[in-house]
Image (cartoon, rainbow, N blue to C red; front, top):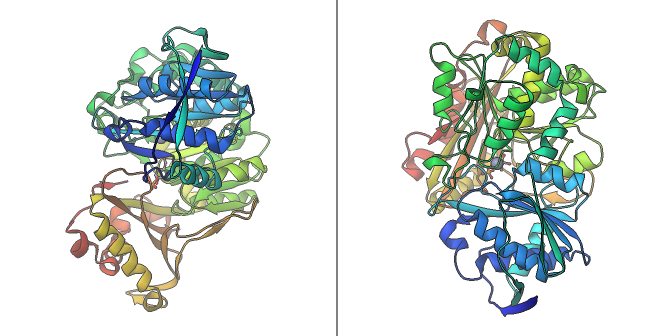
Length: 543
Ligand code: G1P
Ligand code: ZN
C-alpha cells in the first residue's frame, strides 16, 4: 500500500463548537476540508502506533464518503485497527459504548446531531477520547490551532472498504472491523434495566410509540423495543434512517417532532411516547396528552433511580448544565448528594463522571445520561422511564404531578430565536453585559434582581476555567432569565432565552408554563431590546 503525503493549506474556520465541527455539507465537500480537519485531529492526539479507533456516524448525507476518507487517513497515520459500524452507522451513545468496551484510543463520530441533513443540510465531525466522551476544550482548542497551520495530510492509496457486510478488511497494515452497530449497546442497556419488568408492562397492554425521526435510532429501537422487549413493530415510527432524515429536522421537541406529538395528544393516544434526534443522544418524553420537560425528567429519574437495577446502589451526585432548571438540585438535596452546575455541553460532565463525583447528568436541551457511557443517551432515558413506569404502574402524568407535589415545581421554558443576523444577536448580548451594573438591584414589579453576571465555571477536577457561558439574571425569589448564544448552529446566530420560576403551591401546578412565566418573558424582551434589534416578534421554537 502506498501512503501519499498531500500538500494542503489551512482553512481558517475549523473551530469546533459546543459539540465538534459542524458546517453545511458543501463546506465539507470543498477540496481538502475534511482531510485537513481529520489530519489536525490525528496530529493533535498523536496516538501510539497500532492504536484502535472507533468510527461511525448518524447516516446523514456524506457519512459514507467521509468514512472512506477517514479510514484511508487512519491507515496512513499508523492506526492498527478501526472499528466501524456496519453501513457506517453508529449512534453517538453506541460509539461511546464501543470506545469504553474495547478500550480504544478514542473515536471519531460523524454527525451534526439534530441539525437537518441532505446535500444542503449540515454535516459534522467530533473526536471522543478514551473515556468515551467528547474531547475537552484543551484538545478541541489544540485541534483548531493545528488546523490553522496544517501544511500536509497523509492518506493511503487504497480501494474503498465494503461497509455493508460485517467482517475484517485490510487497508495496508490496518484492519477495518465492520461490526454490528447495535449489539454491544443493546447488551449494555440490558445490563442496566429490568427488561423482564418492561416486557411484562408492554405485554399488559401498555402502549408505546417511539419516533426515530428517520435518523440513527431506528435500528437500535427495533432491536431493543421490538426484538428484546416484545413491543409491536408499529410502536416505532419513522424507523428507517435516511440521509436527509426524510426532509425533517431530527430534533425531538414539541415543534420538530410534531408527528409524534399529534399521536400522543390525539384520540386513542398510547400511554407513553418518546423520540430521539439525528445521532441518538437526545430524548423527548411524553405521556398521554402530557409533555415532560427535560429538566423535570432528569429530576424524576434521579428521584426514582432506586427502582432501577443499574442504579439501586445509589447515586454519587447529579450534574446539570447551568441553563437547566434547578429541579434536580432539589432531588439531590433530598438524597443528600452533591449537585454540580456546569456550562452547556456534554463535554463538561466527563471529568465529573470520571472522578466518580456524579452518576446522572442532564441538560434542558433534551439530553439525559449517566456514567454508563460519556455521552448523553436518548434510548437510555426512554428505558429508564419505562423501567420506572413498570415498577410504579402509574401514568407519566401522575408520576410528574406527584413529583411536583413532593419537591415543588420548577416552571421552565426555553425560547429560541433561530437564524438571526449575527450582529443583532451579538448586539443583544453586548447590551445585556453593558447593563449589568444598572440591572443589579433593579425592581421589576414584585421581582428584584439579585445576581446579574456572565456564568463562568471552574472544573472541580482539573481546575480549568470556562468563561462567557451565558448571561444570568437571577431574582431574589430565585426565578431567573438566562441569555445564551448557540454554539452548534451553522447559519446566522441562534439566541436562546431560558426562563425559570419556582412554584411550591400544588393548586397552581397544572398551569401552562408560558402563562406562569409571562412576567419573566416580558422582562426578558424589555431588557434585551430583542424585538427591536432582531425584528422578530415571536421565538422560532418554544420548548
Ligand atoms: C445545544 C444545546 C446543548 C447541547 C448541544 C449538543 O447547544 O443547547 O445543551 O449540549 O446542543 O447537543 P447550543 O446550540 O445551545 O450551543
Ligand atoms: Zn444529538
